[in-house]
Length: 324
Image: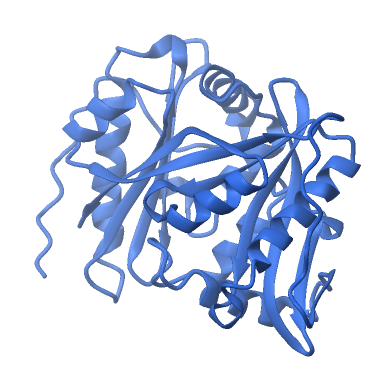
């Protein structure tokens, strides 16, 4: 594969790398964006979490567009996820749309991603980034940068009120749910994740460090071991569900970040039992709603499962990408 030289970026705004002193102003921008498109706030911990993303070297891999007062109009970053992926994250303040900031950030991300691609050993290299479903301005900007829609994700939501109770879990014969034991279960849990998601898009080469960062180790992951459940058949890990508590629309809600069943135990309704167990746990915390995200192109069985516990779907986000 030959890599075409990156096209020079013609800046329409001042930009520079992110520094520590930007955290509060960047948080205000991300908070405005998440409130506009996701109906939830963003705090300083979430910002610091994002800046600490593994594989992102802020001096070379981050781009911040400030205004004359030091407020942030836009922000982007890229980071490698070896062996063959580079990912990006970019957001523009809702009040600064239509000023060319998104176009600038998309160009900066793709140019830097092409530079990173030359350092990776596995070819071809794929660059991806995400756009929220509610952000209608993102699609034309990303298309103009040469990206195309790769996957659409849905958010499945259910009420957990006094009048709406999840079904009780019915465990397959021989399968027993139990708590996650940090350290002792780590290797087996990641292996179970890899096996359970081996046929899913984007999991061809799972990044172990990045997976643990997203699910447990980052300050904003909301890790709560009491909401992680491991299903075991004798000494073998047959499935798992990982849940946490987050904030949306000014109230706390449950979120199921991962649910996996290893192939040998499929067809036994273990996934249904795991999800029902997690929803009942979240309901017992006094939460009113719970949600999870699912790939819209991998939902034949998944939608049946999620609808079976009372969940309904709504657009969540789109992954955009291009080969480098």
